[in-house]
Length: 143
Image 1: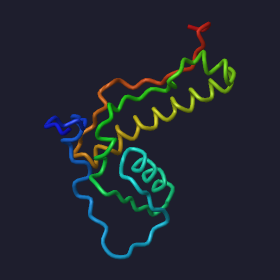
Image 2 (image 1 turned 60 degrees about the vertical axis):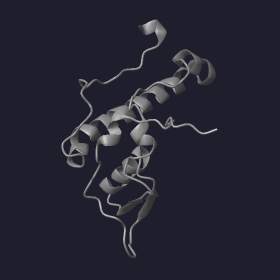
Image 3 (image 1 turned 90 degrees about the vertical axis):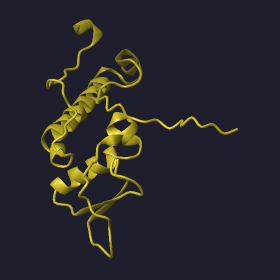
């Protein structure tokens, strides 16, 4: 059975051209690393490698940030799907704290990137409108 209803998700981000001046790969190229996928993970990895001196080529069959990345809510949180108390039961306090701190550092890194680097590629557009905050780990007994 077919339907005229488009079941694909559509987000606000899909109307923003990301790196519109990016060129199509032509001919033979040389690089240190090839990244397949120009979504959030691919572009972030390419950026981090390039800041370390790597020559990186990113390839994708579609638009830059046009796949799942364009359909995300872009909600960043340093929490896992289960409660911190559950992680403590499974992995212990030390591992739970290390996990949380690594996730908080990743959120901070992404925020830094979007505040400083991304506007150069999105015509000055930065979707981070929230005040900067550094998150700290606390157990239920500390809150």
